[in-house]
Image (cartoon, rainbow, N blue to C red; front, side, top):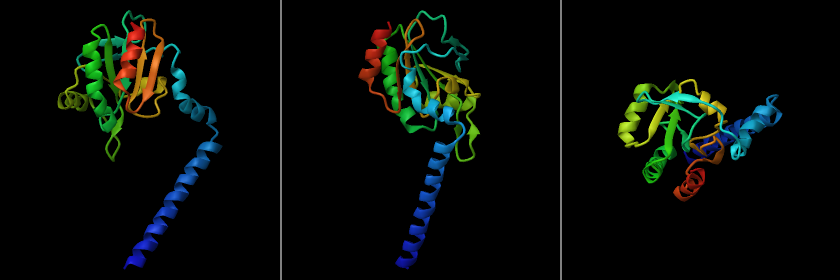
Length: 186
């Protein structure tokens, strides 16, 4: 019985390895190399003007990235993302430490194995279940994620009063790094 499991396990690993190699080959030889390079250069947004966007929070408040006189922390997240949920206390703390700061998180990603889009009701449930103290917005067309060249969740940006991106990070972000960038943005 163990030999049979070994053979099946080995076959599975070979198929998985072949699939990964195929994806790697496709990315390298893709005709959309510009798109691939653009996604890889995610960190290059630091120092640039933030893409303009306008969203409405789940509470009906309109938030725009342009013509602002306040610094902003923008997080692009997904409700299924565990790291995104783990960032909530950091963003809550940041919001309370800097009352002059707008903190907004935007989602609209797909969820579950059937890849159904998140709904406004999902986002509202997420806020109450996760004890979110900052603004949440719903962007089902994912325009903000595309404009900010999001390649993973969470993606966090600190944008100063003039619209310049002072910090961008992906994944778990340290409070001290965010706090330092926010202090520079004020």
